[in-house]
Image 1 (spheres, rainbow, N blue to C red):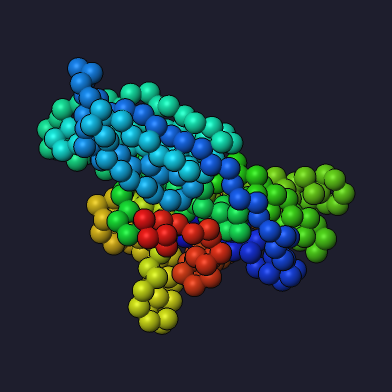
Image 2: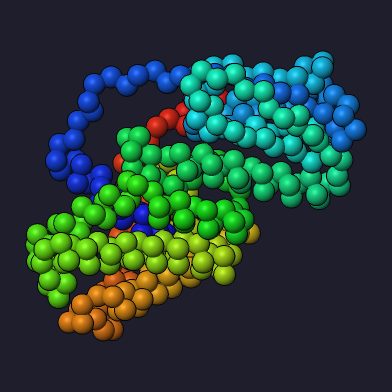
Length: 331
């Protein structure tokens, strides 16, 4: 994985395993509701037989609109969802929302417009990419730790510029990531790391601020800004098949190679330059005694090496700790 969120996820998991974290009792069955609506064209004519797909909580369900253009999804788990209506030769219609409790939600009419084959294909790719990213933003290890920058899709769509920044920013402001930075700052202070920051509340605040700066700069630079510049995808693409050595090698090398927006594998300029760039920026706020070229090189190399280790964890461990997705549900 190509962002500092990778280190946070793996570090928190290892910390949890080391402390013997156990599940606390049974998990209550989530509330379910209903999502319904109607599909029509630009003139308001109803469209029967349109394919309607609902994405929510990592699962996908599909049906066709009835004779009056209506559709209704029952037993939809509470939370965010997206509905896409598709008809051949027309641009897709997209609606979304959030179910609260056992709510029955009626969507605004899903209007489909006629379009050229090129327009329809472009719209479909962007909309599907949005749906996939929304599913990735709900991926949490053990239901707690964010696991955004990994795709389990069999056919992942390329990310738009907006989606690259959305993934990065969501990672930076995630409460679980911030909490882990706070815990790491406490361990640094207890161990006397970066003694130039001092002790007490002031020293802790400086360590916490430096940790947040590391995460923010590293994530946004390697996960958003440079992937836009170099037109590369910052996500880790789960393999899941093949021998253990082949999968391990795939995971390790994806620290320095990545998929471009054109779907082809190429050197991971965004990740490598982002790692060293974040290391260079850290010279602005680390204690004077810890600054210099060595800090830049050390932080950059450590970040790349840890990316490889994190990818191996994604391939063999974290996948099984992430809630089931549609490819496991047979949907």
